[in-house]
Length: 79
Image (cartoon, rainbow, N blue to C red):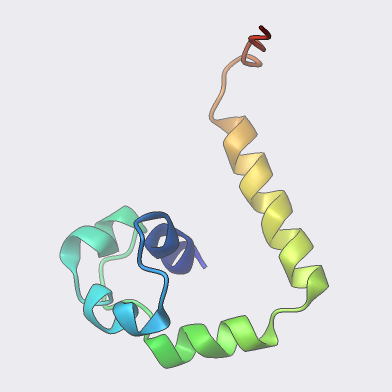
């Protein structure tokens, strides 16, 4: 999942982009792997099997990781 999220954040919207990215050492390092990443067909199966429960669980993980990046709560700036 990390591979798919990082690729989307970098502007690689299509799964076919992963055929080239899966062997890219810099991309492997970014997603904390030291071997070839998932193929486009594997990622497609992941996306096809995702249901609303999976989406909520993934959302919760992403929010928890975002919050964990702060030592203290960020200040709100209102204008």
